[in-house]
Length: 467
Image (cartoon, rainbow, N blue to C red; front, side, top):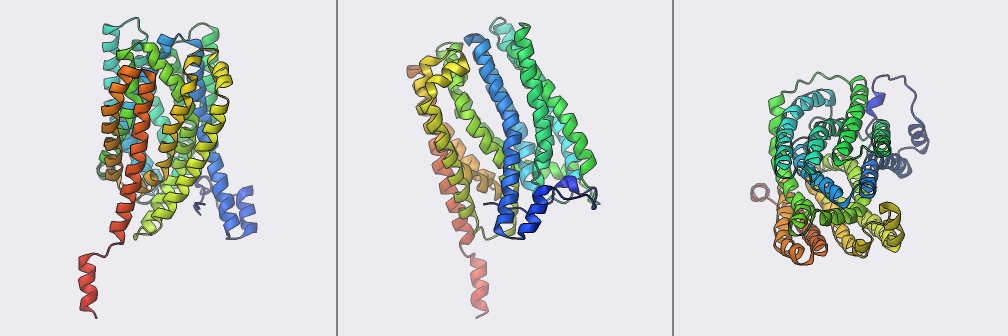
């Protein structure tokens, strides 16, 4: 499938270092399709392992909290987590997504200097996010001190800067398409979070605040490990980067990515507070219990996107005529939809035993709704390929148009549906958004490719004058 011949950044320190087994086997195979396939399969497997350890620990934490907390406490956790996702999208849009695009193209040969600048920029962005989180925790404590929500929001306030630093360190490895070292940090994070949750439950200390605190500790410890390795491994260069210039480049791209992130958050997370206001906090817990099953396939695709986006950015940078865009989009979409369909077929078949196993008998009454959740997940997966290619083409405005259109339609239909039909209405609000997003990104990608292929009037005039 997709191929990259980039060198592992951990190998640049010593030219005499022996090659790893995969590189040796690739050398035997020669510069052929099997060699490329081997390399890409290895990197994809490591990316999935890395993301699987991190998202798997978060998924397991969510499942354990659903088992060990009351429905009201778990609902508070779900609402706080949705707020965290909203604010963290600012960081992702302004730093990490532009980093994946520009780190794979404009700053590819000066990653050490680029990372140093991003470390400074992230301090300001993190402060802009932490302050409103802290204020929201105080407001919740004044309004509903016994609901569990104040503690959950306070925990998110502590966890946010640690997670942001963790994400930045991880993404740096993917700029060179070499996720092998990131797996070490992911394993450490997984052990700290899950081990800490078990200890807190055993000692009767578990709460939404405690859960977020453990996530913060795991992220901080992992960040220290990854950054220390990067400091030794990344090569120096003579390039001098000015923070203002880097920020201007990030802002030019990221303002659209930020608007897109906010638009995508609305249909995905707005229904947790909506259901709580129309019904009770336990309804948010029921929706979270259902959406947990969509998490594994989403996280797998996010893991692969960490590789696909920098690679696609290089491909599009080398092919200004955009001829490779439709084929690249189709390959990504087929893989995404195929994996998603297989996953949901198995989950729906085993939904009864899975609910009893994961939730210890809780939320069984909403288990039949898994098939409805799967519909939206399939549409979300179908939009995957086109969305990545549009981002790689440095066209975040197109993604914004797609997601904002989907968000508006979702709210118009989903909020009344949630009021009258409860959790079912909320799920269909999310599904409508996913379906509209899919249609929009496909249409916008086709339009962009067609516009790039159309001859410019200036070019035509010049061609005619030379005849």
